[in-house]
Structure formats: structure tokens, C-alpha cells
Image (cartoon, rainbow, N blue to C red):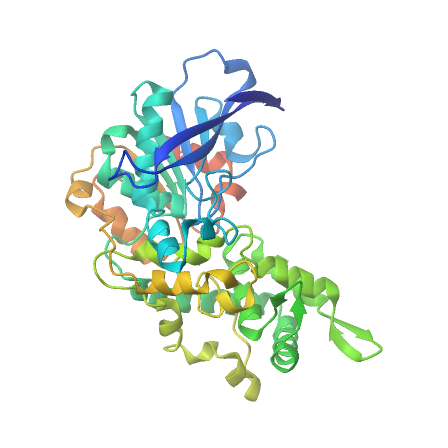
Length: 433
């Protein structure tokens, strides 16, 4: 354990040992990493704990620089724990480099089955007594972190003082197919809004897709494909994502001795934006976070996409329609084009075929909930369906919602202190601030 300072903060790096399989507490263990953050002037104070669960799956906790964004508001009254969920960041990372230590694809898939929200919550419950002396703590869950928070309410509400959720109320009983069947129309609306804002991007996207369909260039071992280009639509779910996508497209082509070609700058930007090197668990676990019961997910996003032929870029190029972007979905081709995923293709297939998935949510327990809960629900959230979220909100006793169109899915980052202020007021029954 080591402590150090940043502007306005004292940070302490902490490590914990937890079972890989919580049902086998005497078996193999893994290490978790978390960073404690406390206001510089409050180090000696007895402060309540707030644990932050990042979105994903597959992303480590955000690395802040000083008391910025919502963290600056949180440390005014909490001691904050920024947890790298198992397999992410510095918490025994699961990647193409480390997973072969488990054995072959079958052993890797069995290993990864322990990396969903049910295991993450049990990790939290092992950590909490070590830090709080047994006192309950507040959870702030962003996106998938909110999914984990609802699992927490289902499995261990006694560990919770309050729950704050931003863009992360999951459907309690929707299948992966249901999730993606709701997602494609949302994505189409986001694309339409982008093209209305930047109509010049319609022709640019068609030209880029046509070039990729003919040439299929390679950037540092990452094959750039039409489907990969379309997946840049994942950017459209963030507050500034439409603008970022526009700027990425505007310098796509350059003239050279061989004629017009994709610029190095564009190819590098596309490779960086579509690579899973920094978060491979997102690709490996994405559909399994919706799995409950004996039914395999079976590449649900790929199967459901066939129900929306307007997303077929080659059909669009054969006519005069716009090329639609996609996003927030994982497909088999991801494991063919991305060098960070390619060695894990068979493991991903086994995950898609897996039929042993315990239920994640307890509807009866949620209906009897006594923990104060507040959730920010974003209108037309591209990543988490608003209708699904509101149905879940109505199923959790006492949950108070703040439904807003002011922010996109990344509202806790964009809105920072104001979003956290609003949610704290709601869970405390205070008037709106």
C-alpha cells in the first residue's frame, strides 16, 4: 500500500486478494487493485466510503488527475474507492497475453465465466469490511457499473448505504436478442441526427466505405474493413461523439503518387478507435452480461443485425443510400480483424455457446428494496435502452429517477459535480438543487 499526492487529493493504492470462484473460497485467488482518493485536508477524518464501478464491461476505473470532474464533488464528503473490476486495469488483467496461462480456449472460457457482475459484487463485499469495518457504503455505478449496482441490490443490499446509478439501469429479464433488437433503431436515430448535423459526412462515409470494400488496408496488423468503419458509430453515444466522428472523417483521404488513398492519420485514428487492445474483456464478455439461464447468447448482435438490412453497407453502396454506422455491439468479425482479439476467437465462440449462466437479478428482492437508490436515465441513450431502464426503475422499490435529455450516456463525465449533486439530493429526499 502506497500513498501520494495530486492536486487537492491524497491517493492510496490498495491491493486485495479474492477467490477466482467465490463458491470455492479455498481455491485459486486473484488480485484486485483499487485506488483510494480522499480530499487533502480530510485524510484523518472518519469519512463514509463511496465505491465507484466503471462502465464496460472490461474497463478499469478512470484515472483522474487531481480532484477533477465528479470526483472533486465526491471527496467533499466521501472517501472514494476507484475499483478496477476483476480482469481490468491492474486487477489480474485478462488479455490475449495473460489468458493462455489458463490453458486452451475451453479453460479460458471457463475462467471468464467468473468475470460478470455477480462476481464483481462478491469482490466488493469481501473488500468492504476491510475498509469500512463492516459499515455499509455508497455505490456509484456508471453504465455497466450500474448493472453491477442492481446486482448488488439483488444479492447483498445489507452492504449498501445508498446507490447512485448513471446511465446503467439494466433490463431485468431481457435476453441479449431483446437488447440488440431495441438497440439498432436507437443507433439509426443517432446516425440520422449526425448526418443532419453534418450532411457532408454522407458522401464522405460512402467514399470511405467504398475504398475499404475494394482495398481492405492493414494498419499495424489491424485489418480495416467496412464493418469496422461502421462500428465507429459507437462514438455517437457520447456528448461530443458526433463532432469527434466528423473530424475523424474530414481528413480521410490524401493524394499521393498512387492517386487518392486513405491517409495515414485516418487509418491510425480508425485503428485506435476500433481496437480492443486496452479493453479485450468488453468484446469477450459483452453479450454474456445479458445472459441468464440455460440459453446461449449465440452472437445475438450479429443475428439481430440481419433483421435491419438498412445497416448493410454494401447494399447502401450499390444504391444511393447513406452508409449507416453501428456501435455497442460485438460480432464474430471483430475477432478476425483485431490482433488484440484474434488469438481469442475460439474462446469467444465458446463464450457465445455457453449455457451455464446464473440469474443476475432478484425481482422479488428488488420489489422489496429498502436501500435509497437514485438513477440518471438519459433520453434516447444509445448504449442502454431508455424504455428498459424505466421499466426496471419502476420495479425497484423506492428508486427515484432523473430523466434528462441534457446529457448523453457519458453524463457523469460531462456533467460531473452537477450530476452527482442531483443524485445525492434524490437519494436523500432533498429538494432539487
